Structures are given as structure tokens and as C-alpha cells.
Length: 587
Ligand code: FES
Image (cartoon, rainbow, N blue to C red):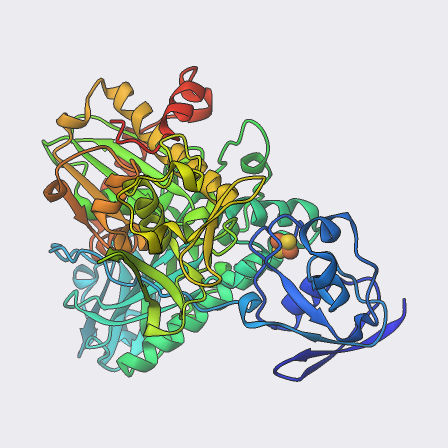
């Protein structure tokens, strides 16, 4: 294989590689930040790069000629996931293709927890008597004088002996490992107070935005599982360091970690073969018991003698993060009928109360995170997050008040609501022709509609628009969410009126405007005051479990008690899904 020199612009990073490697794979390998939303399979067209003079790369393949215009190809614009390096070359990554750091939701509803930590410390000034020992000790008891015993109350096990009195130092960390972001909270286990929070993107995003891309990467690459596992463990260790720095302590002083994530993330964390999850009948091999591992076994750099616990899963695609939401919101204790919706890169829904809970995972895909939408993007600087129609003018509010670059999830919902509420889009999702627009619509708004032969397009700014294909993608995502909710409602035999509260969790859920979600029929039609935002509830659930071994037992019991509903197995799914794609307020 030929050796090739590649320069990535604008940072001027010089790397050596061998011919045959794709630009996307090389970028991932050498830490160049590049978006690959579809998992580098040539479907989304969002990994556009510019190859200087078109030299040193393979000829365009079918996917590239389908997704790129003739003019773009002539200018050297290529898809990084399809183009292979064949010689020395210079590759420029435009801003629109650079992996942006997403606005991360790191706070959840803060609830009171009775502190029953899994790790405790006792200091012995003098040698203790046998009966003073909280756990079995096989060493020389005389050597315990002027020492601190660190022990696990969860396992009645000695963890370590420390010299002197270290009882003032006892930390734990709770993590929510999401498909897109990872959030960790450092907690003082003596008081239960939060000392620091650290968050970052999940570095696995360079292998694709959704869990399917990650699973495919594992199946198609011999070292895929190890590679993805290393990425997520590395970011956890980075966040541990950052949180410790903020709290002026060291990772050695962390004695307990609780992690939760969706089923795929937990498989990758535990280095468990995800093949059964990725292939029919899509079964999780993780159990409904807490996964306990030595920190060193997982590769997490905290006190060497400590354990890491990873939440169990409910079943199928409904994982530990949903258990976190149930724990955080006390859904399993309430007498009222409540619906919790965790909209992240995927959508999980749980319905019920203390008597019965049902849960499902909706294949909403990452459309609400901007993927598969031509002008879609992550919730990062320049993303339109809010849209209003005021005095005949469209007002777009962007993250960081920067010039608009595209829509993030909340902006997409607002954009869609504007089109639906103003009669620009039919209930079926068809963008109307100009002649069909309501007469009362201001002329400036009518002018924003551009007619094309293969479906119309509505321009929100000079270059940011929703076209017919984008609207269909939004319909598919919202249809999947709503169909999942309706099937759970059927399962419990209830109607929208019976729902006392809708709890919106997750980053996307937290930033959307409830009235806009209602306007496009994304969620059941309830009074606005019944919609409660609960922030990063999964992370809050992990924090609660960190503080209490009793709540850890609750987590295992909830995992067994919640009924997992496999939506694809429901004979009603296709009909309900088709009906749920409509934009009217249909439940
Ligand atoms: S087309 Fe390259 S990542 Fe989607």
C-alpha cells in the first residue's frame, strides 16, 4: 500500500496514512472533528469536504454523484465517508461539516434523597476490637491503629485501608452516558451534596449519530467494540478529571460510580457483544440486575479498590437511562397516571403509575437532533432554536445569538409548527402550492414559498429551509413517537384525558416549547399546565442511586416490574403509525 501525506485544513494538521483509507476514517483516527451523521454510509450528504484540486483521492462513486451536484464535484467537494485517499492531498473541512460541541443539558430535577451510601469510612485511632469491625477483616487487626477502613455497605466487603484519618474525603460520581453526550456529577457521599458537574460530547459520534450506526460499526469491524468502548471510557475518565479539578480533589478519592445509558451504550461500556441487539429479534443480553464491575475492569480511573455499577435494562431497546427517568420522577410511586417521554437521539416512553408501568422505545431516529434534515444541525452555536411569526415577520433566535447556520431540534419543531399553524403545510405533510396558501397570510410569508417540480420548499432565511423531504423526515420521527405513546395507552386502556402529567425529559425534551409540540401533534393533547420539563432525568436517576443503596434495589425491582412493549410486534402498529404521522392534533 502506498504511503500518503494528508493535510487537514483549516487547522493545518499533517498526517501520514496509506492509500485506500476514507477521509472520514482518517479524520476519526487522527482526531479531526468531522460530522458523520449517517455513520459514514453515504446517505446523509453531511460529511462534505473540499479536496484541493481533486488530487490524491478516488473518483466519485454512485452515492457521491447522487448527493453532490455537478458544480460541487467540479469544485472538489466530496463526501468524506465515500472518498478514499490515493495520494498526497489537502482536505478542507467547512464549518458546516465540522463536528460542533452540542449544548449539553447537565441538570435535572433535583429531588431529596435519604443518604444511604454504598461506601463508608471508619477511622480507628487505636486498634479496634473484632466486634468494632463493620466487615470481615483477615489482616492483622493491630495494624488498624491510626488507619481508616473503607468498606462497601452494599457488599459488606472491605475495600481498602488508608493511613491516618481520611474520613473527611469520600466522593462518588453518577453518569448518564448518552448516544450524543456524556454527563457526570461528582457528589460528596458524606453529605449528598453535588460538588461538580462535567459534560462532553460522546466521542463515538465520529462513527455516526445514532445507535444503529454504532452497532453496525461493531458488527463490521473486528475491533469495533473495543474501539467504541475505549472512546466512551476515555471520555468518562476525562470528565472524572475535570470534575475532580473543579472540586479540588483527585480521582483516587472517588470510591463509587453509578452509570446509566441506553441499551446500546451499556453494551458498549460493558464490552458486551451487541450482535443480539443489532440483529433480529433484537434482544439485549444485559439483565435486569445491576451490573457490578471493579473500576479497573471497566478501565475507569478512580480509587483502584472501588466498584462501578451500571444500571440494568428493562428489555429490548429500553435501557438503564429509562430506569433513571423512572427513578428520578418517582413514576413508580405515583398514584396518578403519568407519561414520561425521554427524547434524545432515540425516544423512550413510559406510561403508568405505581400499579403498572409499560415502556417502549420509539424508532424516532436522530431527526430531532438535526440529522436527515437538509438544514438540520446539532444544538450548537448558530443553530436556530426558536422561531416566531411576529407582525408578518419570521423571527429566528439562534444559540449564542450567532448568524443562523441551521435548525436544531427545538427550532425544527417551531419551524414545523409555523408551517402547520399558518396553513402552509397540510395535515398530510404536503407543502402547499402558492395558489393554495390562505388568503390572509402576509405577502412576505407567501414569498418564502418556493415551488419545485418534486415538492415545494419554505425558506426561513436566505439559505435555511424545509423542503418536502425534510417534512417527511419530521413526520416519520413524530409519527414513531406518537405511535409508541398510543400503543402504550391502548395497552393500559386509557385516553389522553386520563393522563395527569406529561414529563418531558432529555435534552431535546427540555428545550422544545410545549405549545409547539402540541401544535404538530407530537405528544397527546393535554392542557399546557400538565406538561412538566424534568431536564436530564436519567442523570438525576443515576445520582439518586449513587446516594442510596435502597434506591438501587428499587432500580432492580422497577427493571423487572416494567412491561417492555415491542412496538414492531404490535399488529396495530402500521395503522397507528400512519395515522400518527398526520399533523393534526389527533389524540
Ligand atoms: S454521507 Fe457521509 S456521513 Fe453521511
